Amino acid sequence: MHNRLVVGAVLLAAGAASRMGHRPKGLLELGGVPLIRRHLVALSGAGVDEVVVVLGHHAGQMRPLVESFPVTVVENPQPDVDQNASLRRGLAALSAKLDAVVIALVDQPLIGAADVQELIGSYKKRPEGTEVVQPSVDGQPGNPVIFSAAVRDAILEGEARLGCRQWQQANPHRVYRWPTGNSRYRIDVDTEDDIEELARRTGHRLRWPVVSREFSVSDMHCAQCERAVVGAIRRLDPLAQVEVDLAAQRLRVASGVDARVILDALLDEGFVAQPAP
Image (cartoon, rainbow, N blue to C red; front, side, top):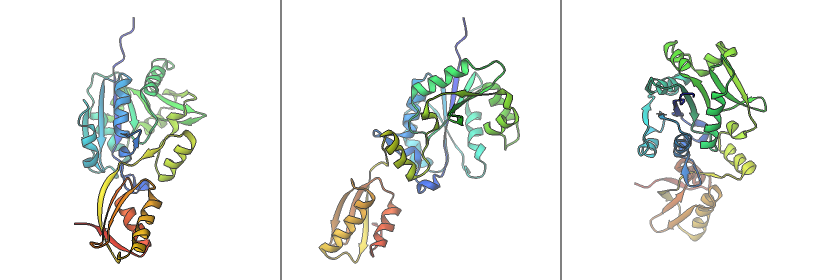
């Protein structure tokens, strides 16, 4: 009878999301649930024993979403300096009792508990002598990956630049490229175009959380101006709720669109706008 595999996970959510307008991808919602919470539910549902979440950029916005989960949260104060620094901080925060570690990425919107379970199952059945299992979809590498506690220790004991990718490059014979037809391992979102492509290909629509904001807008004096302002915002977000106060030259917008994008759209229409005090 085999002993039960004790599995930990590191969920990486420290990036700046520069190609997403510097909005944290973990806040994107699928079915009304932020991606960072969906990942934590998936890891828990797959039977993962211990989870560390690594935050960096946008930590103030992300931390409240994970505080209700039984996880360890660590922050990387300089996530842009070294891509492997967040990984190493997460691995160091895991306990020593683990047999294997899953490395999950917050920008993979469709990964669920069944996908994590399938990955763990492939690790249990991996070829003898291999230490890392990475999904391979049509010959292309996917995520999450899973590796042994020995690999975790080797990464932490190695030089600062050493991460999972570098370890694999140095030890290709100890890596199992697990063939699978599960395309969810290959899907991530880095740009707004990726969000649209995901919806087109799969029918799954990611949305930014709706936030109410107020703006002061100069030169907004007539009904024609009001229509122009509302039209500019609705082109960005057809579901936006817009309230206009012509007398005070203010508007309130409830939308998932970033405030800076709204300001740029109003500027393009010839209005000068700024967040209301």
